[in-house]
Structures are given as C-alpha cells and as structure tokens.
Image 1 (cartoon, rainbow, N blue to C red):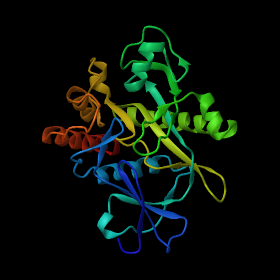
Image 2: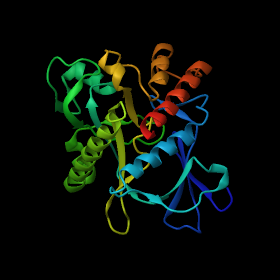
Image 3: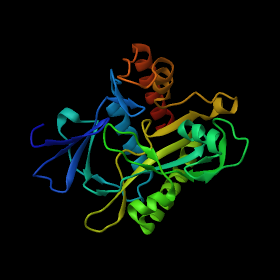
Amino acid sequence: MRGWRHSYSGKVRDLYTSDARPGVVLMVASDRVSAFDHVLEPGIPGKGELLTTLSRWWFAQLDDVPNHLVDGPVPAEVEGRAILAKKLDMYPVECVVRGYLAGSGWVEYQQSQSVCGIALPAGLADGDRLPEPIYTPAWKAPLGEHDENITFERTVELVGAEVAGELRERSLEVFARASAIAESRGVILADTKFEFGADPVTGELTLADEVLTSDSSRYWDAALYETGERTASFDKQIVRDWLSANWDRTGTPPELPPEIVARTAARYRELIERLTK
C-alpha cells in the first residue's frame, strides 16, 4: 500500500507503519481464521470487515475506556477492514475473563476443579454460569507457539503487582459492562480476552487490538441456552468443533469444507445484526 510498509503479521492481522504517521500503526484484519494456534485454510470471506465493524462498535460502547483508536483515513484498498491505532508498549498478557465454564476452562476444571489457580464450586457442568466472572490470564506466546494459561501470581512476575492488578480490575469491569449490553440483546458473552498496553507518553493503561469480537470471544444465543442448547454460538466454535472431529492436532490442519466456511461467516454476520440493531 502506498505510503505504508508491512511491519508484522499475526495469526489474523497485519500491521503497517508509515513515516508520515509516527507513533501510529495501520492494523488490517484479514479473512484468515485460526484455531488451536494454527492458521487455517481457506479463510472466511468478509471476516476482516465483519470483525473490524464489530470491534469499532464495541469501542464506541466503551468510549470512556482509553483505547488505541486514532482518527484518520485508511488506504482505499483496506477500507472497512482496517483501523489506525496508537503504538503502545504492549503487555505480554492475554486478559481472559470467563463468565461461564467452557473451552479450556472446562477441560482444566475436570482435572483440578479450578481454572488458572482459581478454585471453583464442585459439580459444575460444561457451559454452566459461574457464581461470578473470573479473571484467568494467559501468557501471549510468539507466533507459532501455544498461548499458556497462567496464574495471577505469574502475571505479577511478568508485569509487576500494580499493573497486574490494573489489568485484572479493568478486564473484569469491561466484561461486566459488555455482558449487560449483550444480554439486553439476547446474547450471552460467555468469555472473552482483552489486550492492553501502556501509552508510551502518559503511561495510561489502554485497551488495544480487537475487542469483544467473534474471534476473541465466546457468544451464545440466550434463548437457546435456556432450553439447554449450549452449542448455538456466534463465534468460530463451528470451526473448532469440525477440527476436533477431523484432526488429531498433529501436523498440518485439514482444509475447512465450504459448508463450515459458509456457516461460520453467517454466524459472524448474525452476531453483528443481533448486537447492533
């Protein structure tokens, strides 16, 4: 792209910098989809634009929470799937908040009756609502490696006690607000992950990356959940389920069938319609 040079690619996002905009990055959401720490083929058509739309909407709902958005036009070729963002000193922590027992949390609970060192009541089932949301951080692994669930104490070792406490407090606060907004629209926010960085000038804790999207969150249909259907998700669980049934997680993942790609894209679109109507 004219005036922008590629600086980094993650699993699903590409970052660009420009000498004309020091301190700013162009963050482009691709149509790539990842699961179990692997980028899969093919991508989900239109996914980058859908995620960017949803992320922008959530940032607007949380406009009193400092975030990394920067005003200004993006190149025409990435219009709709890109944002300008302030460069931050990012913390190496995935700030995961769980309101329900699911995914890797459920797997860990079955083994230890706890998640990331947090003891939970006995007798919980997959998909149960927790007595209160819990903060279960993870270490952000480099591309190609697996993210690792860690205890809060390990977070303190990584970023210091003050920042660790701020990350936990802000994550739980934003999760509570987002959960209430989602529930008012018939959607359950089961869990999500946030990323934060420090403003290099002010040091202010700043919400970054994507926020509350279908890629970073687990969303369920509230009405169906009440009937006992706990798999009606608005995220990439369709992809995870198909992979779990068709891949042993060794070697290269198989290509996603057209039906799985289409169903996933449809659920992403439906979530945006449900939340933003």
